[in-house]
Image 1 (cartoon, one colour):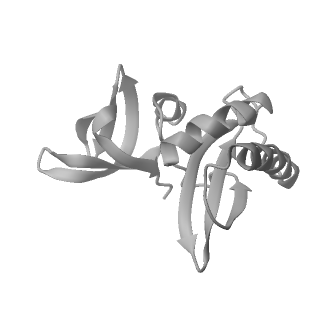
Image 2 (image 1 turned 120 degrees about the horizontal axis):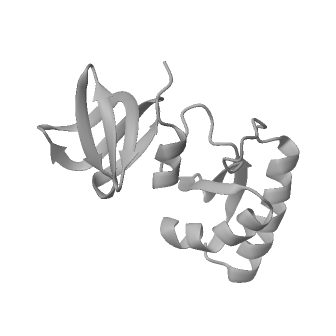
Length: 152
């Protein structure tokens, strides 16, 4: 469901000049919550996401969701920035945050562990290199279950 929503919502969000970072679906009470996280594409701009940006994206996303009706039942739509501990989902996300501290969890253990917290040193082809306490770990992107920035 998440991947289908990403494919459905990415074009109208990009048409407004934003990047779709992630989509989260959560059951809450009698309904659900659809959270859409947006950011500005990496273009040298240091502007953050404003309330007006969220309102604009919310309006466009609502129109698509009403037309396509991919989610059955009652839910609330929330649009926001990815925050200081943003999700890292694509190769471009990792490239954007080289030299930042990250958390990565693998689908299956590698080198005897699944969780890595350290400084993202590089992205080489489809692998990230993370410095964990002075030891370099090469993690294939397709083996990463989830990753996010981990500011200190």
